[in-house]
Length: 88
Ligand code: FES
Image 1 (cartoon, rainbow, N blue to C red):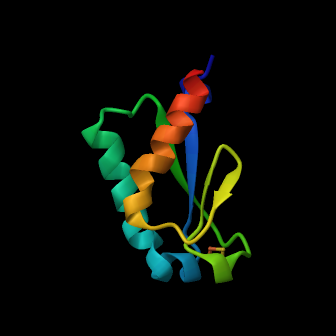
Image 2: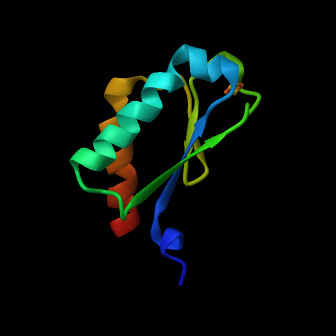
């Protein structure tokens, strides 16, 4: 089995609107959280182009669920939620 199939995929919108609304920082917060908590085997981060939801940005998508108006402070809660529900 491909190792990445077990990982929770975090897709960060890197379109110019989301990027300037905060995803430039959000992606660093996500990567920092993963590293600090040694969750490299649980999550993988990728970027995407504009998802045409710019007015609600910054947007990220995890396991297909779209999170809008994401704030850096929400990242640990969102990631841990996905980790817990995956493990259950
Ligand atoms: S730039 Fe992210 S939805 Fe358009």
